[in-house]
Image (cartoon, rainbow, N blue to C red):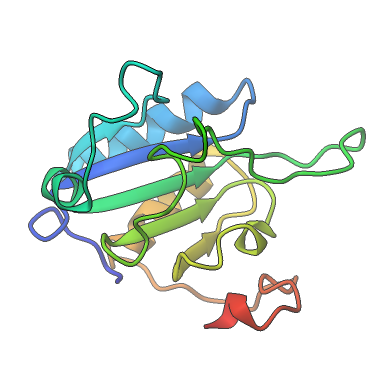
Length: 167
């Protein structure tokens, strides 16, 4: 799927996951960098009972977005025993869940916990940034735009030892 470009992936639904103080800064930096690249960015707003069925079909959702980009800003901490994704859903529905990963190009960028692939094995383009510093965010955008190569060897097993995360 990489590199992305504003001709092929003009309209991006940008979703930040996590409930940390840094969320606004991380989201705003990604949004600003993507807009500078010529993308139209829509921020994911959690559905309510009034809006849950606004996107009532795959076709309507696909017509609206060319790419869905998740930013996993879920930080590890010594007093947190679990750093997993908590999806916003209403009765199992909603556009926060990656139900569309086979229908719309979907990208997951983790800038916190490097093991989120465990929660999203259906998303086939997954990037570990390892932290949410401004430098890392800029570097990730350079890489997804194709101006910089991904290099190095992962210091962890991002596949979490599972077969389905490697498919």
